[in-house]
Amino acid sequence: MPAPGENLKINGDRLWDSLMEMAKIGPGVAGGNNRQTLTDEDAEGRALFRKWCEDAGCEMGLDTMGNMFARREGTDPEALPVYVGSHLDTQPTGGKYDGVLGVLGGLEIVRSLNDLGIRTKHPIVVTNWTNEEGTRYAPAMLSSGVFAGVHDEEWAKDRVDAKGLKFGDELKRIGWEGEEPVGARKMHAFFELHIEQGPILEAEGKDIGIVTHGQGLSWTQVTITGKDAHTGSTPMPMRKNAGLGMARVLELVEEIALSHAPHAVGAAGHIDIYPNSRNVIPGKAVFTVDFRSPDLSVIEDMVKRLHEGARKICDDMGLEVELEKVGGFDPVEFDAGCVGALRAAAERLGYSHRDIISGAGHDACWINQVAPTAMVMCPCVDGLSHNEAEEISKDWAAAGTDVLFHAVLETAEIVE
Ligand SMILES: [Zn+2]
Image: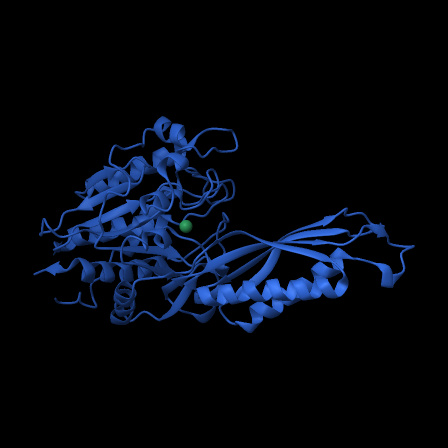
């Protein structure tokens, strides 16, 4: 099987024009986008994407969760398709590239193949997953999750937004509920291009991030109980200060995460202190410890040490402590073959690259459960995302899409 030549590239100008055209739909208030899932703006963005795909000779499939599948035929009717894609929905104050680059990068691959008259053995299917962002309907990555069998479809369709509108009703209302059973498709492979949404690639001057893993996480809710008492009249040795207990546990969280540097992280982002009054020693503290790592055994070790350490700290201080797991998901290890195809593509094209771990969730993390999957990332300015000021350069977008192009071509097999 010949590898694509190093001169084979997508059309970076056309890709950029399409990104800018899509960004006109559902404009934000500060130069970004508000194209939330299952809104009229989402429907308009979908219609534009469908038109572009049909103009490029693709046939559009639509499943019962509204996931879109634009298919470019292969030469072998038996060969499973190579899928590529991401999401067109945005945060309420989102950027122009988060998700959109991965979908329109896939379309650009099809357009470039058409320009070059290249046929592939396997079909290529460009996908737009419904409701990746999870802002209007929690959780994030809802429809790729249903596709992968992680979530039940009926449960997903019963999700309600802040106004009480159901996902299933809104999908019908905007006219994008298909008839194809969700998850029925079988994939030869799935590739997702995404902006990094972090600062590493730009800081190191790398063009490309080859995503080897997705971080897993575990949330532990810690409840420390002491005794509310007057801050003035209670002697120091007689206090049961739950706030101080929490402070010592938070020091421990930092210490545990740092002991697994550089990939592990830990913090408590949500903290409640009771009664939260200036002249009352806190009688109760409730906080959630968020530990993350690409390695499941590391997450398990961090949680175990938190349990042991928090008990010891609280015992020594005469405080009660309860620890409860309130959320989490396992780390993702992407397919070695797909990761290798992306790395080889970056090498062949002469782009600087490094392996990277995704700190955020992506559709690819669910699809990885049902098909060989990998992700490639391009830098974004200051690592900023989920913000209207999210920015990338035309060259970064083109380089990421070139790498995606070569990996997809090698996997879909060029027909001579
Ligand atoms: Zn995204």
